Image (cartoon, rainbow, N blue to C red; front, side):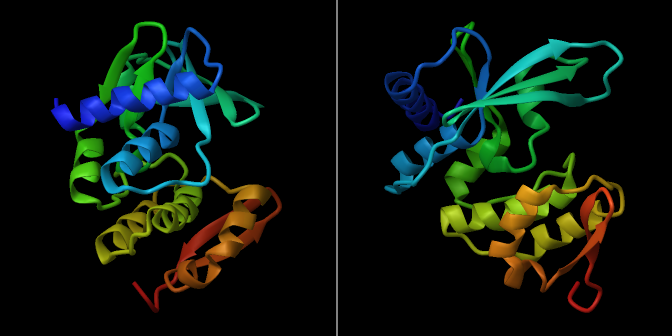
Length: 209
């Protein structure tokens, strides 16, 4: 394990525990850990540290994982997920970007760091995963995270997002659409948003890709 990232991760966990009332169980994963570690490494201070804590429920007949329920208390979101694989490293491997593939098990005090997260911290390059669950939402999240980290889009990731549109038909909700509106100018260069009765989804903008 990368020693520097391990030490920064322990520092991040300590800061979260000092500033928030965290439960004794669950997997704290994703953005809050990433932003703290990234901030220590690159001297960046973020405006928010939304905390996601996952309660992993074993269910044999669930393919990959399924989000069951989300309850929010202040800045902390408690997310119940079902999966036929409850290994924390597997859970974070399904996340949509390399920057969020880190987790800390509050019940065992074990840190789980995916190689792709190490690559993000070392290279300062945001990459889209190849197994995105909701590609329409991830298109919006891609531009949001570029903005948060002050990074620029690149052709490789735009093509990866576009490719996955062929296999993923999940919709986005009104909250996601509001975020899309903030990044509309950049997103519309590559993707066309469409609307149906049950929500919004993206289509490839063939003129640009």
